[in-house]
Image (cartoon, rainbow, N blue to C red; front, side, top):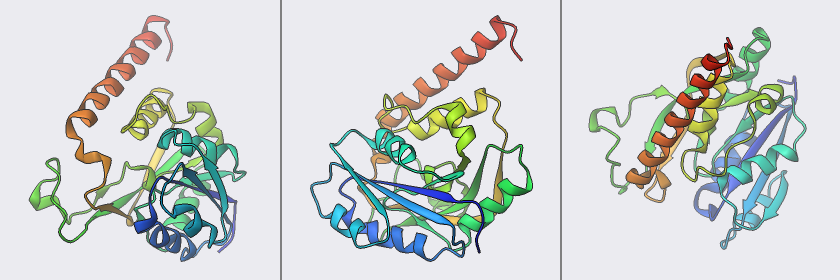
Length: 231
């Protein structure tokens, strides 16, 4: 299937363990009009060599964090639509085509999410935030790997904020909401979010601190709009 060009942005930092599987899941998509930009964010393993073995545009930079890696990938891409895939997640084969169809069907939408399931690697301890009974249930994905956004909407909201080490994706979604960007979700599991013990989401206290900062910034933006009589 072909259509508008989709730029797939893959930030990588020491992701050799799972990167090949992630890129294979992009290659297996049933949508043909894609470019893949891998941003190696100062890896000390062979992530760059793995990426270079695929048909991708490989960028390499000193370690600056995932927000700046994603932003660098966007800056070097040219697609009408932007899709993000973390180094340890997987896409199901209809992920790109289903989201493109949703964006084309409604030109007022700025971005589209999908549903996802959680892939807990064998032997990996369950994070405190993941209830046992929800481990294998699907949910609406708000992680970057579930996001496809129009370039125009991304530029309107602005890039990922490197001030958030762990929750720059939550901050971006909050800014998009506060900016009035319309969105939708494909009601289908199209992403597998992998938990493997090395995820930064295990740093529960740091994640909560950043999420509180995200909420506080959002409330300040909303008060500012109300105070100036904005809609």
